[in-house]
Image (cartoon, helix red, strand yellow):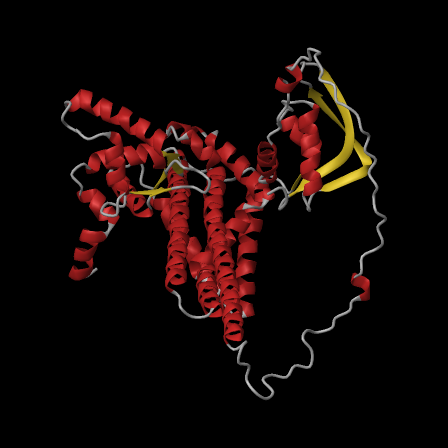
Amino acid sequence: MDYETLDRMRRTHPAWRLLAADHGPLVAAFLHATFVEPNVRTLSQADLVARLDDTLHTLRERFGADVFPRAAQKYLDDWAGDERGFLRKYYPPGIDEPYFDLSPAAEKALTFLASLVEQQLVSTESRLMTVFELLRQLVMGTETDPSVRIAELVRQRSEIDAEIARIREGRFDLLEPAQVKDRFVQLELTARALLSDFRQLEQNFRDLDRDVREQIATWEGSKGAVLDEVFGARDAIGDSDQGQSFRAFWDFLMSPTRQEELSELLAKVFELGPVQELAPDRRLRRIHYDWLTAGEVAQRTVARLSGQLRRYLDDQAWLENRRIMDLIREVEQSALAVRDQPPTGNFMELDASAPDIRLPLDRPLFTPPVKPRIRAGALAEGDDAIPADALFEQVYVDKAKLDRNIRRALQLRAQVTLAELVDQHPLEQGLSELVAYLSLAAEDGRAVIDEATEQLVVFTDEAGHAKRARVPKVVFTRGGAA
């Protein structure tokens, strides 16, 4: 925090630029209402322009037509430029329309501005208890003396036994309304801070991806050396303190038991009277699903990095094959140049022009030739009027949508049956959609198809009639249908 560092941050850091911008209140208010408050990760350019147009129209009606003279698209391009860095503008794979995402630096600035607003309740007691609990975990988690650990566990057991005895006697303490509100405010702040951590983690992986692309573009050494450099950087991030913490958090969150426990605890907390007095955001009840969504975005960023490495290997293989062909052509040209005046003596000795390899098991089996029978005859042109209605009554089943239904169900449990999927997502196209589910199960290496056991599937066909079908029992498990 010296003068030079702060002066450089004032000129280069996007968070400082946002706070010092001429239209800082507009930028902060719009980005907070669009991305942070509803926890929206990305928005298309058309949606973001429409929302900013509405915001500018409202402000111009209140403060005059000249208060924000530029068009919404101009503002967005300016905010996403390198000189600002408030937004990240990018093109998702396979999509021509640009998308926008909030940058981690801008989110830090919004968090700082939110902390300046006078809070209804400052959670001092819960923070103090958190400090004490973390200190206990640090001390006991690093204690190497077994006797000390056993003494601490005995003390905790004595306190638990005493509390059980008081409860059996009808004497137990309840949290005061102020204490309930204090802890809930701390819970809300921590839960929302986790979403910001995901955006920063995703930015770290994007920085790694950019560094890898720069290395590949300027690398002049061998392929093994650059791969060793790239994978070393990838392992360094995965094995870092931040990477290990993220892995532990993700494994904890992906547990179906933990997800159910979180849902039940949040539902009970929101039913408490003191919590309802705070008028909390109802979206907080599904905050763990927002964590899952944000975590999947970070995982997809890692997948794109792997795709870049594969493309690099493909490009290098093509260049190496081209180099081999160039060498062969040079040999042929040299041979043609000395064809009329061959060198005297033994020019080159070869034991054999090519290795003699015989693989008896590689010989194909005998296949009798097929003799087609061709009937000669004139083709008559038909003049019958055939209705073409059947061409326009075709049913198209979106297998990608069915695959998303399977993945969404497997986020909450380790496995799900086909009958349960149909109950959650009723068939919209009848038997064709049911067959598509069976096709996905057959293509999925982790799905189980038990032909010895049947299950009854009830659905409605295209005509609106109730139908029942008996199919083999199909069980989708986590990790498949991805």
